[in-house]
Structure formats: structure tokens, C-alpha cells
Length: 280
Image 1 (tube, rainbow, N blue to C red):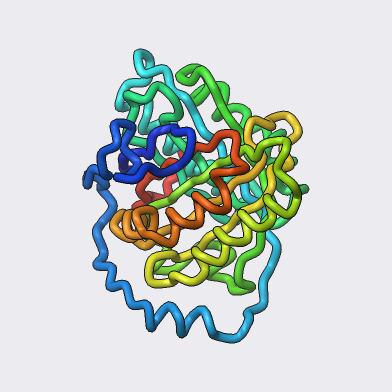
Image 2: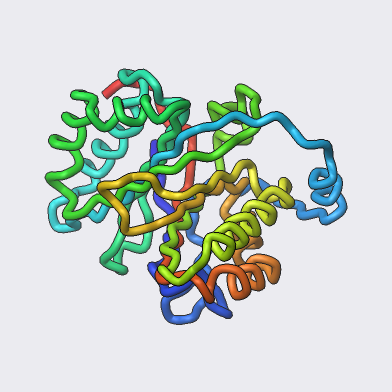
């Protein structure tokens, strides 16, 4: 079953001094992710960060954000929509990993659901967009209940290990999927952008006690250019994500590397629980 979590509201920047709440409040602990204990250890993370470089493999990431028509989307239709999106991986070639969920803060009037799909090659993504089965799922179970879809596609790299590539194994069964979308201003230089994205990658990779995996890249989807860059982070739990986004390192990094150069940004998240393998 796919569960629902709270979202980070759409903001001018993805954090406030007191948290992500639109009124300046802190996070609400209403995630339904199974709460695995997070024991943060700086020593452990330093040891991981100082380990030898690992072999990586390129992957292609697809993020789709939906804006549902709440008056039309009943609980049953919502479940069907998410289940059809998730189980479509069993009938399409090229999908390496997938996660989908409901963003809990529907009072914001913006994005209500999120889909993340991983492919090995750009060609697989192109086939996905044109796949008759996927188009049928969209036409019958998604677009009738949504008034907007935002797609972002980017290339990234992950550890060249079957569990990391396919996001398989116990540590991927649960957690919190965090999506960060940004639009860099036109006056931001290539160096400004590279420094910002590199700082985010370095921070997430230095905290394995909180982060299972993180990817990021520039959006190459020519038909959907609202956002220029994206990052997807799988946190070990909601609490792990909260520790990260409320931490001084993240806030300092955002203020110095992103805030001066970002035109707009969206940060949201949804919980991940094991789902069935029945094809819809």
C-alpha cells in the first residue's frame, strides 16, 4: 500500500529559519513511514567520507509532479492512480527503479503527488514517454483527475552496484523521498551553478547515516523548462530528513551557495513503504 506524508510547501527558498512550514513553523511529525531509529555519528560519516573513491555508473532520472483536482479524486481513485503508476514498471522495459507517493499538504493548492522513475539510458526514457501502456495509464487514471503535470529529467551517477542502481535491498524498502527543484537565475554563472550543485552533492554524500542515496543534475527536458536543476534524495526515515534540513550545514550551504543565484525553488517529500507486485 502506498502511504501519504506531509509535504514541504512551495517556497521562495526551501527552508525558513524555523523550518519548512509556510507560517514559519517546524515540521509536523505526521509521516507514516516506519520510523527506523537514526543514530547520527559524525565519526561514522567522516569515516565514510574519507573512504576510497568508488566506481559509478550513469543513470537517467525522471521526476513528475502532479496537481490533482481534489474534488474529483476520491480516496479509491487516488489509490488506483498511484498503483497504476507504480505497477506499470512490470509491463514496461527500461525502468530500473520507481517510487510514487502522495504529498500530504494538499492545502497548498500546488503539487499533490510525485513520481520518480530511474532509467539506464536516455533512449529508455524516450521510449517511456511514448509507451502506449504509459499513455493509457495517464489518459485513464491520471490526467482526468489532475490539472497540471511538471516533468524534470536529468542525468546523474550512482555507485556501480546492483543494489544501488536498482534501489533494491532492505535500506530501500522504507524511507523518505525528498525532491528539490530549482531554477537558477539567468545572471547566475556556470561556476555559480556548479558550485551550488557540487556543495549539495558533497553534503549529502558526507552523511550516510541519514542519506541512502542522492542524485542530481540539470534538466534536459526541452518541453518542460520550468526548473533548471533537480535533486532526489532518499533519506533513511522522516526523522533523518528532518535532521538534514534543519541542520546548520544545509542552511548555511543554501544561504551561501543557492539563495543568491536561485530564482525559485520547490522542496517536497513523500514516504516510501513496500508495495505489492500485482499488475494493475
